[in-house]
Length: 263
View 1: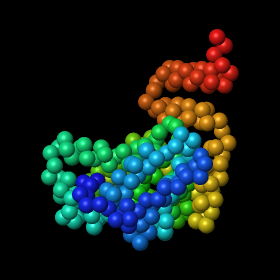
View 2 (view 1 turned 180 degrees about the vertical axis):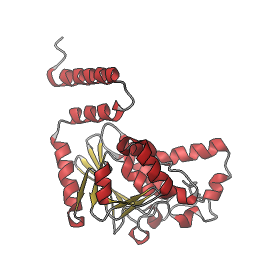
View 3 (view 1 turned 30 degrees about the horizontal axis):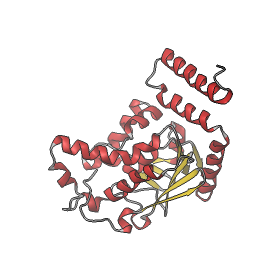
View 4 (view 1 turned 120 degrees about the vertical axis):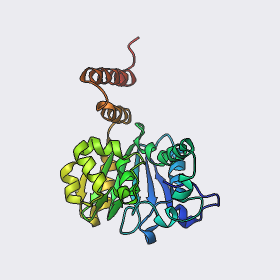
């Protein structure tokens, strides 16, 4: 979390590429020289990408160049004395600070949209903001060299980019607490064992595995996939009776769209 720079960001600072191939959009973190450490300029561009998606996009792949997915917050920015520093953010009023963090969060939270399925392709380290970026995706395909860490505690901070709820849903509150308060590294094998990984593959096979998963998603009916994502995403907040009702309503919509209302 940092306040946005007043000056225009350079291409290197932005460090995000966007490409679309039919129904598949690919977002690439592209600052490999600093292990894709994240800046407010990157978050602004990530947020802008949500506005670039055309209606035919069904799958969004989030990947990274180089040997790491993301080393997290760029500490040279966070500890600097510019407008993009933690010190400047701390000088804001409580409401202004919360509002600025809310803007940062939108760079991550759009990945949860029920209209798309999002897949993170993770190699090397995914630390702090990098871990949370992967957590905001629906699925995480890990290379066997992947390492997760929620390292905010080392800076005296908390994870604030939309990762805590998803982490808790995936591994449970006790394990989530342990991961966040220790900031320890989680190997790909452990991530697979505790439910953080959808799949773990050799590093050389990461791109192909993600492409295969995207193709499998696209093979399903678009409307059904969207409804299924919404059902599963909201399931933890519903009672059994509420979930049963949500299933009935979703199925009614599907039948109406596929076969007509019958009226």
